[in-house]
Length: 266
Image 1 (tube, rainbow, N blue to C red):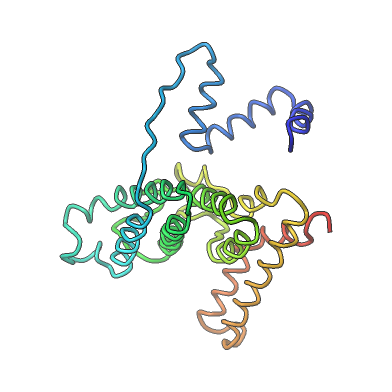
Image 2 (spheres, helix red, strand yellow):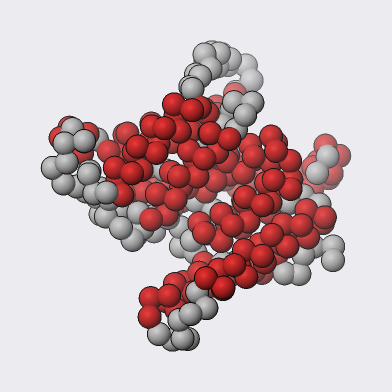
């Protein structure tokens, strides 16, 4: 929407609806978004001080993320593996959050390749943590305070900005199929993190601003679904873990199917 369309849309809302919309933006937004809203709510108050922008080496960030993910998957944070210090086994959630923060900073670089790969690996790990015990926690995503949909939103936005829509669609459509989770990414669905999560179909919809983008993204999405079907075609229906995986995938992607078919304007 441009400025005129935005204000026309606001004119149709009453005071309560405006307050609810602003609260949702404030509560579900990033720390920077909350600071901006607080500043607008108190224009006469002191302006927030300028924070020095942090910089990381994207290549080093990627290498550190690769090491962390490999250690987690190998069970090093659960066992007495000498590659992980005893103190770090109990501090894993802080280490995880730091890697996510570094990946976010790496995505600010003019070349997002390493930052995007680092964030992708961390989101893959977060997705796996729903089912696998890599750390000593009953609900690791809630413990680590990582809002997966926020990280995916940042990743996709930066990839779209830097490599254009075609590159974004080719990478984001398979990631949507792989990462979407019908009930969020925590194990229990309760706590502060689930309140801030949104579906990845919603994240994608925010970036598909014109009908042509919907059509192109849907093509990539359907290609990925065909690829998944080919990879799982050897298991008879109703039998084995592959069939359960297919059903689970279909349930997770139900919202995306409703949003992407038919594509708006077609």
